[in-house]
Amino acid sequence: MELQSVKVQPPEGVQLVLAQSHFIKTVEDVYECLVNCVPDIRFGIAFCEASGPCLVRHAGNDSELEKLATDCMFQVGAGHGLLILMKNAFPINVLPRLKQVPEVANVFCATANAVDVIVAETPLGRAILGVVDGSKPKGIEAEKDVEERKQFLRKIGYKF
Image (cartoon, rainbow, N blue to C red):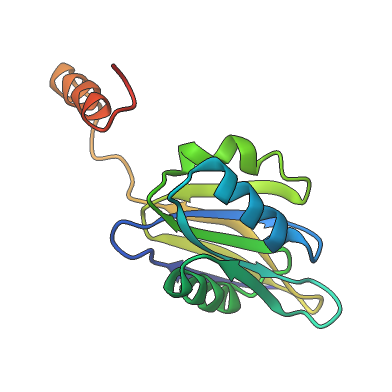
């Protein structure tokens, strides 16, 4: 078995969801899920088929995000891997509904950070083992940090 790391770097202002899914209709069902979650969402979806022609299936309503997601998943190359790149929405807006899509089996991460996707390759194929999402902690939250966190959440409209 060979291990490697594949970097996925979302552009500024873009969020990503990396997941595991199955079945050829994944991109169509995820597309419908996303447009029903957030009216103005822009996104690209890419899904690595694990049998048959083994293509990277893709869809989206933003051609740049769709191409970027497709290129990233071709590099990751792990069967049943699913990548969603989105803007005008946050993962918190789509994750509950996304987890209800019958084909979605697992969510590895949801972030705006660059991630290192840890991939294992065997003679059978490739698999996502997990992700490195962001930096390690630099300290422990103090009272000042708690207040800044609370102010930030109110500023962006997630708390009153």
